[in-house]
Image 1: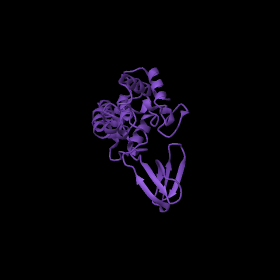
Image 2 (image 1 turned 135 degrees about the vertical axis):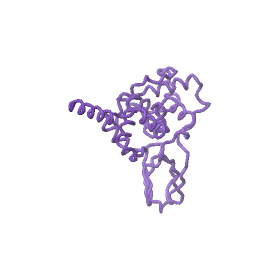
Image 3 (image 1 turned 180 degrees about the horizontal axis):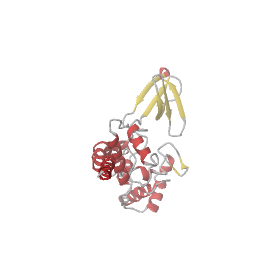
Image 4 (image 1 turned 60 degrees about the vertical axis):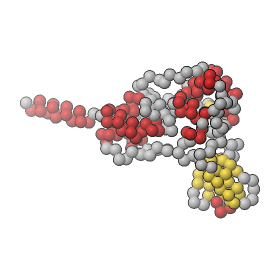
Amino acid sequence: MRALVLGLAFAVHVFAQAPDGAVGRRIFESQCALCHGQTGGGGRGPALNRPKLDRAPDDAALRSFISEGGGDMPGAWQLHEDELAGVAAYVRTLGAMPPEAVPGDPASGARVYAASGCPGCHMIRGEGAGFGPELTAIGSRRSAAFLRQTILKPAATLPEGFLYVAAVPSSGAAVRGIRVNEDSFTIQLRDAGGRYYSFRKSELTELRRLEGATPMPPYEGKIPGNALDDLVAYLAGLKGKL
């Protein structure tokens, strides 16, 4: 009888400790899907429907990252341990889902990428310029729908914290660039040529924050439909290293 009671107690303990996938899914859909997509395909946040996550190689690291956050992602410190475990367990199931079907010809898309001047701002496997985001693994971080929207209307998918700035020093030429860093007294910018600038705000005659602006031009109406499908397929296939 004692063995039976101990066995039941152990079973109850194990059941209580098992991650609740249903709870994890509800939390994910209400708090995470806005950035990562309903099925983890990515959006403002990286795609999670992958068998391996670079910043969370194991479950403990994934729970820690969810709790503490990192980069643009805030920490979910308010979640209890069982809720964290549930969210982590649900995220792992996303990596077991079949890959997204993307129409288009990636080989043709690579030619569209080159012909559209994309290497002038973006880098893939060490080739191109580094003014815009590095794209070697963009397909593992962003969904095809997000990539399409960014190509057509880049201002609609700007990441949190991104700011394009126009600075006019009291002596010297005006500069437009992406904000790299800023404090109460100084601001650092990087222009389209990859040059870095550091200004004391007291020495600027004008500092304009170009809210919602981006150096990337919109390609809506500039790339035919089939060519756009091919370009999206090419970018979605850039998985980098898992």
